[in-house]
Length: 471
Image 1 (cartoon, rainbow, N blue to C red):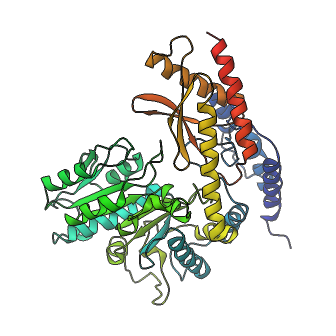
Image 2: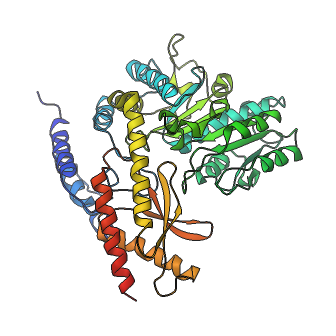
Image 3: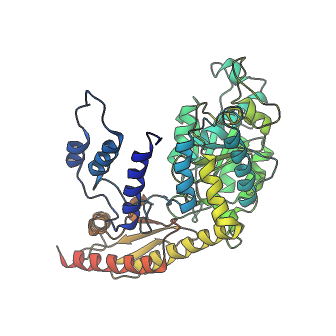
């Protein structure tokens, strides 16, 4: 007897194969009103055939999808999906395991356990650290900073899980002016308040200044403090000097967290791991799987050196929970209770690539980024603002009629960015860095090739030439 899901799954496979084998504009082409007209339908009174639902869904979203899983998507920091990871992600939904406890999903628990061990090996973190697989780096920050909050308040004899934050010693967060917004959101989610964040100045290379950190710590040496350092900022891929900064923070008893959303993966590359010298001495680290590891979305990793602080900040006991004394119960280490078995896709990606494959993926995409940035930056009327040291770089375009006017250059840069997206050959995003608008270049897709890079440089050349001829 056929399972009721067989036909809609077959339809999904057919649509997926067609999508993957067809060339698309890299940027979505449908307008907001067009998408709403197709998708915002009256909710049907009666049930529909599930295969029809899938066919209708595919038609409805046509034109509204960025080809973000493709090789010429260079916006934000978005990877694709490795074949093994994509297939494992499909099976994750088919198996439909609640990966909260070993008792709920034994295989999911052990796959996650193995994945955590492999990740620590690849990222060159101490084997003793605890870990959690969460939805993304945003929740990895939340997880790590929950452990940090527990630890720094426990040193002041305050049990935050029992007594809350009302009346607790205030915690300050010291970080750089180049911090990512996910840090701010994590601090807000944890009830510490955005005003607890002190943004310190950086040097000419985008790194937190050691003198600024030491001076800030010395102003209130007894206050519970968390220092957030950065491994790869989103504009130029800057890495803080961990070997200098972490000892300073530890001298004052601060907890050190490293935001390594993508930059922590540099530790998997023998060519790049020098950028993370000293990072192993931090107290916690966070990164994404759906960036450089090319795992489908819903995949972030948190690591904490103080296992007891990590567990104490999240674990919960009740008579109705079926615990296992010999296995790892995931709910004790991550913020979610009901959760999908996200370890399967990570496990499959790591098995597909292996140690050398991960290193090659990182090195290759860094090379492509450099070629793209320097190639576009050498065009007439273009300039490089940030030469990539990893997979992030910046290019700016100067107004041909008044290249000395910063405002006109900002507008012209945004115009070129919009024209490139309209051409459909590549996708970039913009940013403002040191008061100047720029095109961000971010390459982390496993499929990106030298031919893709050459095609994109040629496309941007044509776009820039056309724009310079048009008032």
